[in-house]
Amino acid sequence: MKQIKSQKEDSILIQSWSTYDFKLFPGSKSTKPYLHFQFLNPKTNKEERQRKLAGLKKGESISVLKKQAKEMVPALIHLLSNGWNPIENTFNDLPITPLSTIQECIAYWLKEREIKVSNNAMKPKGLKTNGYLMDYFTKWLTEKKYLFRKANTFTQIDIDNFLQKTSQERKWGKVTYNCYRQDLGTFFNFLLTLKIISENPVNLTKKKSTKKDSSRFKIYEEDELKNVVELLRKDARYLGLYIATKFIFHYNIRPIELTRIQVSDIDFSKRILTLAPEKTKNGDEAVFKLNDETFILLDDLVADQPPDFFVFGHKCKPSRLQIHQDYFGQKWRSFREDYNLSSHLKLYALKHSSNYYDLEGGVSFEEIRQRNRHSSLQVTTLYIRERLNKNQIKASGSLKF
Image 1 (cartoon, rainbow, N blue to C red):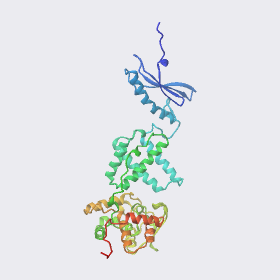
Image 2: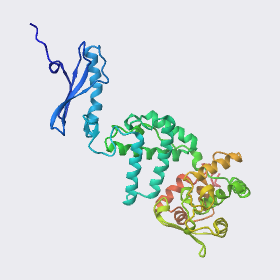
Image 3: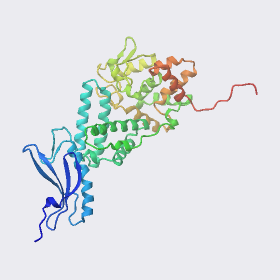
Image 4: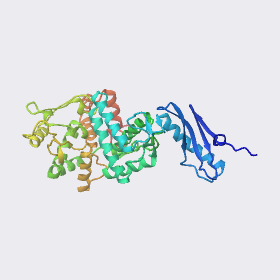
């Protein structure tokens, strides 16, 4: 009489990991194939067999089933290594798990960033930038109907799609693109640390190269400066941008810093503008002595406004609502398009042009250092060599020929 083998004896060991043996039962005429392993039930303290059928096709040969089973094991190991209880399909009370949606992961990350700010481990402006990024990402996820996807399903293709589409919509420059890409990488690294994902999809994407982008820091010709300032001065639609460009040119204040200025930062009696450390890019306090022109422009703009109002608020007028950090860049591009100005006329290049003409006029390196708030003259010297030139070859001054 032929002895009937048990399913246990028929099972084929696929892989062992930690205390787990993942085995394949190839099935029979009446039974579907499945992958199984023993799991200790914490409630009963007894091992129970866990069966996984998805991914295995009934009727396939043993070799095909073994291949399919091998492909299933890494995902199970990933889940178990993160504290997964397959009996109840839960994770050791973790706030987010590999089964969490990308929407849940975003919410948890932002909450953790808020905690870092409260512990002085992160600056509030960093949290605000993260918030903008996740607003854009959530908008894209919503449009794609991806809000309920698991974080570990996102690939390089998804990330490239999001960054490229959002960059086009919001007209990001290369530097802005790279900054948001880096922040998105930080988010996925956070998930990687928590073992929510097994690899960071942002790492496979490429940052924009600015090394050979000569137009990024192209110095304005004098007639270009004169034309731009005259167009801004005459067009009431761009009053806020006109005032902002004065601050960029004369004081080298960065556009993102301008969005943080409040009425309370201005001492009208002393004609002093003071930016607290949390409002500057380098985290140091900055004190500016206002000249007659900028003082009058500011005085007219914020006359009788409450101290907590932002100077450049909603619609670039004094308001309790702060404008977006990319506002001036977008406004500048609109202005440039309205007047059909060359694309090489960059907003931030006004800062470099100011320094270039100051150097030509005999201003010292130290004054350039102070206005740019560089940490040392070495930084200023490098900045001058790399940024303050027109890439024009001048004739030799020698009279010996």
